[in-house]
Length: 159
Image 1 (tube, rainbow, N blue to C red):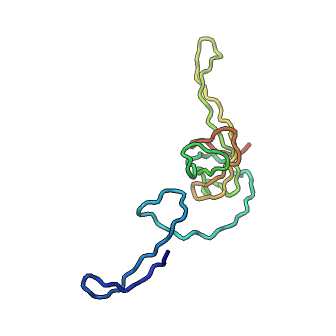
Image 2: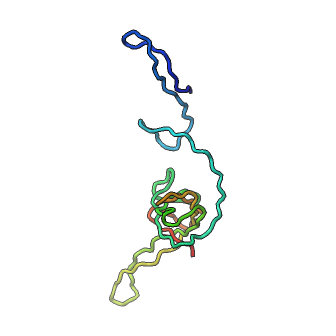
Image 3: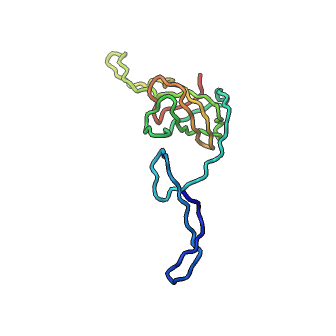
């Protein structure tokens, strides 16, 4: 590893000119693929934050829109998800929300001769806690689940 520097190098005309020599780095560990054109940024200073888990004081109706890391669609306990609600919608660090699995549509066979499709209510499937908020999205940690959680599942106020 070396820092960026300026060295005198001979150019095609034979003269010595100041030339910028780029810095080099040793990459020892990565989480995702790196490509040409990717940029390096300094790591922001660590902020040690205390979280006070609590229910939101405003009604929240959001959706899990992404899963952080290697998982593609299904989420397990202790994984990080992105929800489509943020500070503009009243979400704060420490808010605990219920994860709601969409109710299935089933055929009601209770009426003789008549088959009607009905929508079952959403079912609570677990809890998550927001730990990083932005204007219109937030990162949340899945605290507990009873069944698989997927991108597209709803989140809302715990009951």
